[in-house]
Image (cartoon, rainbow, N blue to C red; front, side, top):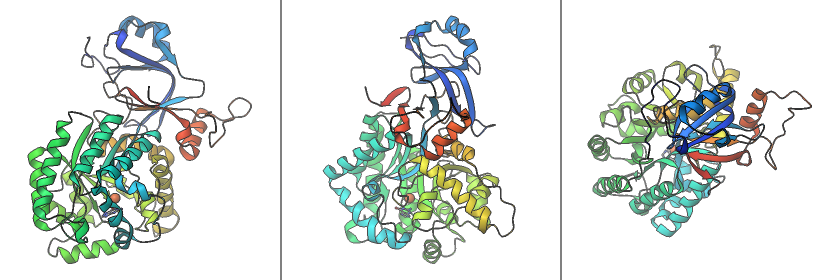
Length: 461
Ligand code: GUN
Ligand code: FE
């Protein structure tokens, strides 16, 4: 078999023609310079799961010469369709999918007690876990999430099942067995020792799946549900196995007050995690709504990323994160559904609500400070390239740069039963209008095909 050579220059690297899949049509993606770049009439070649070239169609004959494929191997996208990178959901609770869309009437701490803990405890039952996790991975793939960063539950076998299902269904994923040795009823609690032992077992088992797209992530639920010894030992495990870490921080004011009471002497919430070895450039921090200046500097210094969860923040009424401010502070930011704090598992909804949250700041919360609201272009960047940066995957995914893996969606704005209409022949919809309509109004009906690492996962073959 002909292997992929290292990129010989920025735009091309060679792959034997027989191994190539080539698409021709409109591509959209984010780059460092443009939040939403629209490339009309381009060709993109994919070999062994990776992007081999991206070029204007005018270069097609050169590409044919260089890569040795035939003109009839080029697949023309259907008129009006376009390719975009897959969505990266930087924070989603897989078990909470079963009650997503319900239990939307309480704030965080009472919501956890009333709805979350009872449901998550049911994942001790592997049969139930298998059914639910299959639904989660299938549904998120269907709505275009090619990479998901999952919380599972405290149960090691069920958590491993989620990793197996993601691997089998072809989704790129981080999967975390949740750690909690306090602040929960006995029926959904671990001892410190069990928590550490099971986490180590889980990390090793996920690695034994030998699926490079699915990785373990250390998951202390949040500071309230972990003792200090547990967090210290999780920090040691993170180092030992060189794995990512995810947790929640600064989500609701009640939560923050309780953390300060439980951990006096640290100064703030971020310092609690930092003192336990949990804050580094592989840490994903969900929420970051109510932040002290010292926390912003610390998170930036450590290189941790922010998972912004606007749908959750509105639904369980935690607050409105100032996205523009986080971006101006130079933090890495991605978007997330935070199912089921967020009722929707669609990153399209996360994008829309990120725009609304930012507008809420410009309308009423900035107290006269200048606030340029985040527009849909930037939300698109955060839902794709931004998420890949937060998860430390921007060298592999996030946009259509040569050498990256082909995680992509084919969008069909004219799909049967599309929730919106396009008027591009008798009226004036431009390509920008059509992309914007999809981002604001589209849903899974418009997501015709989904690819992860060049493999088609929707529809399955
Ligand atoms: N903080 C601790 N646990 C959770 C959870 O399950 N969801 C959210 N949104 N916040 C949390
Ligand atoms: Fe969460």
